[in-house]
Amino acid sequence: MEILVCIKQVPGTSKIEVDPITGVLKRDGVDSKMNPYDLYAIETALRIKEQKGGTIKVISMGPPQAKEVIKEAFMMGADEGALVSDRKFAGADVLATSYTLSQGVRKMGNFDLILCGKQTTDGDTAQVGPEMAEYLEIPHIANVLKIIELKEKSVVVEMDMPNTLEIAEIRFPCLLTVEKDIFQPRLPSYKRKVSTKDREIQIISLNDFEDQDEKRYGLTGSPTQVERIFPPSVNNDRETWTGTGTQLSSKIAEKLTQLKFV
Image (cartoon, rainbow, N blue to C red; front, side, top):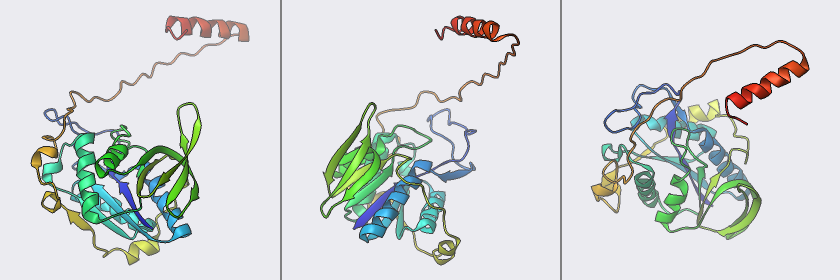
């Protein structure tokens, strides 16, 4: 089975600056890590490979330093990796990002299964995976909580819906976005780190795409623009009360009413 996992490098801290002109995050010099949700997607791919065999490839989009998350994927057990990187991709919104990644996937080859984390911690849109599937013209299911059965030409999954758990069967090739509770991710292996330290990472740029229309990528290809990003306000107000249970319950009710929570 040919499996592709989409991964992303995200800021490792909430203390980051925003470009006042473009509204995008300033990632240079900021501590970074692999998007936590992508760890669950990699683990899912590894479990499927252990059961069915095959090859696991990973793809990421970002600046050259994003190679680090691909190396981490190698340490977990991924076989090959590619980085979609070009200055012309900078500032992309979810639509432009999805299209860019879909072009990168086409360049890498054909896959039976594409796995994505549910969302990223820096964007939280949960839209890139499904939009990629639409561009690739393959079926997709989001919010996958469990792989119930792997069949020869399809997979049966359990979806975590707002009010219910639903079971669906989807044919290959397809794309799944997985929840964080699907599997417990394994730790990277130092032995694999040593054995894969010189493994080649393919770099894919705009010149490698079938569609090289610059208007579809980066800020130019983004129909949505960020107007403003700001850190949430921190409220450290604290009150200490003493009294009997009856007195304290009355104070709590009074405070909740005052704050308009009830």
